[in-house]
Image 1: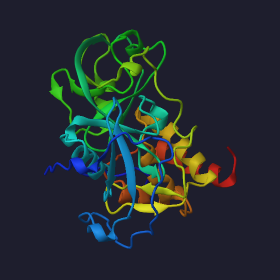
Image 2: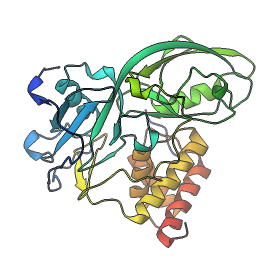
Image 3: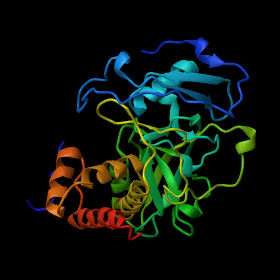
Image 4: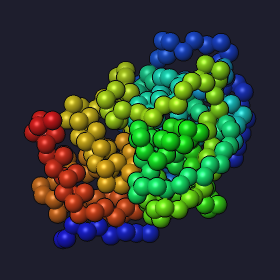
Length: 328
């Protein structure tokens, strides 16, 4: 088979979930066994089949501590956090692990350590900016929160966007030239920005996260490469999946960490996005494949929403092989 891949096309309020004045330090996670439900494309499994885990959470700008449990994916996680703090789920922009700061190295992705503390960043100030696209590349890396919001993960120093100081890492991109892009995946947003004509001016509507007083500090240009700092801790991690139930897994091996980091770097290089969940899925798909064609077929079956360039697939296959051999 050639490598070219096909491109396919309630809210309740429970204030009892809040724990007044509970300290962040020393949070303990529960234990669980792997779910036996095969959730490929199926509705979420019943609560009695989900991992029995309790996580602690706060709003990043300040709040009491809440307890959440019984979620299998990021959307359900956001709903549980919203329920704990009497919010609407769309008010949550993204979450960080073990820090209230907008630290893209600690961004919640597809895995949560069983002892991680979750900080939810909610919508704050809106802003609208005009940008003159003086170069082909804007210098942005885009990611998304898994629930419909694309946001800025990195700003390249000296780039076009770096000169517009009102734009910050963590800003949610709500509109491009008046077109609402809520619900658009990060790779589509990156493509839309890339296709804007050079030499023209365009408009972005952005939403920054609500900040506490101790978070008012100079703008960061974003994270180091994902994977340089471990997020997972404790006895294992809760793996969140866009389809099917969450599963409790061992802390990633050295091979997995290195391979996921390299694939995430390749996603940024080829597609202008960073997505550790997507990178981890690709590594998982390629772990037992024998050649690039077999790998491409498996990617097509697993990630049919994407149309990856052939050279990208080759490079990902090579990166997985290098990680297996310990070559980086």
